[in-house]
Image (cartoon, rainbow, N blue to C red; front, top):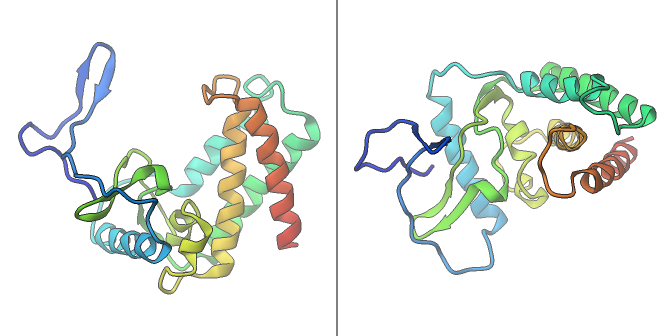
Length: 205
C-alpha cells in the first residue's frame, strides 16, 4: 500500500474548496501493465495487512444499499425503465444477502482495488485510494480486479467470487442511472451495464 507523505502532518488539507491528502511519490515502472499473478499477490498481501487492523468501517452491504436506494428512488433515477429497475433491484438485494450468507468471514477490505487504484512502481504494485474501505469477504475486493487475477488469488472461493462480480457490475450500473452522477456518457454506460449484467446472469444461470 502506498504511504502518506512523511514531510507533512498526516491529515486532510482543505484548499480552494478541495479536500486533499498528500502521498509519497513512487517512481513508475515503464511497462504495459501488471501481470495477474503479481496483481493477485499484491492484493493478498494487502488483505493480510488489513486483516490485522481493527478499524470501524461500513459493511459492503451498506454500499449495496446505497446503490439500491438509487434504483428504488424514481426521482433519483428517472430515466431507468421499470423492467431494468426491477432487474437491478432484485440483483442488488438478492446477491447482497446471498454473499453475506456464503462468505467465508468478513475483514477490512480496500473496497475498490481496480486497476485504476494500483500503481506499478519500482517498489512493486502499490494500492492507493482508500476512501472506500469496507468490511466483507475478500472475494468482494477480488471482483474489482481483472478476471484473470482471481485465478491466482490463494484460496479464493470461486462461486462467491462469481456472485461478487455480478454484484459489482450491478452496483456500478446502478450508479450510472443516478441523475446526479457525473461520469462521462453515464447513460450510454448505464445501458451497456444493463446489457453486461443480463449476460452475466444468463451465464451464471
